[in-house]
Structures are given as structure tokens and as C-alpha cells.
Image (cartoon, rainbow, N blue to C red; front, top):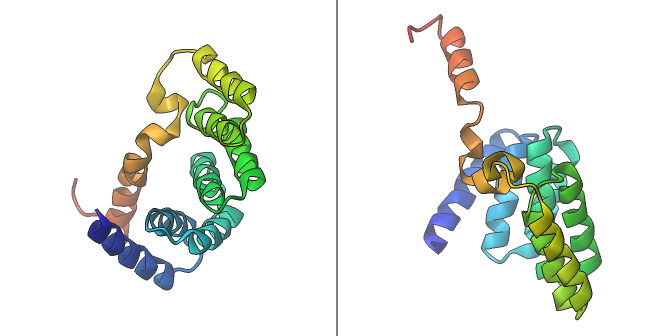
Length: 161
């Protein structure tokens, strides 16, 4: 796993070097940096990405990941703020509520932890794939694949489908 994360980090670093304003590459680089235990570096990368992201789904990921990194750095208030922001972006998502429950538990606020868990169980049961984008994070990089392929075809003179 660690060797794959290091390889992913190298690829995302190359993507960011080619286009320093590529917010999604920065977002994914920040996530990988955090998974490698480089929490300060991850916060810097994620903050830079979050500042230019316009897409709500990517903003949600940025808030979740920043929350995770702040929590790893024992910056609980900042972690809480990020998880609350994620919960605002996707009100039916369970992931930020579970994270907020964990922060409350870590602070010995058992009633607060329980309150967030009760909110999770009160969520409407619909489609987890659309209610919480975390479920599709590993697939989110291809959500606009058709558009990208069509654009490539146009750029190359209209290749056949």
C-alpha cells in the first residue's frame, strides 16, 4: 500500500508541476500526502486546492480531507469546522456526521458523540452513492470521462466513436 501511495504521490506531483492551478490534482495529492503521514504538507496542499475548487463534490472531499488532517494534527476545532462544512454541502451524507461524532468522543463529549450518531440513523435511506460522495471517491476521477474523450476527439480532428 505504501509503495502505491508513493507512486500516486509522484504522479500527482507531476500533474501539479505541469499545471499548478489544477485543483483536483492538488486535492488528490493532499489526500495521498495525508495517507503517507505528511499531515502538515497535506493541509497546505488541501488548503490550496480548496481555495480554487468550484465543484461541490470536490469541495466536499476537500473539507473531509482537511478535517481528517486537522484531526491528525490535534487541531480539533479546525477539524470540526471542516466536517461541519462537508455536512452543509451534503446534508444527507453520513461521513461528516460520523467524523463529528468521533471528534466529540475524543473530547470526552459522549452526549455530543451520541447526538451525531442519532443524526446518522435519522438520515433518509436513499441511495448512498448520491447521498454521500465519499462512497464514490475512488471512482470520482472518471465522472467526466465522456466529456474528456469527446473533447480529445474534437482536438484530434473528429476521430470516430
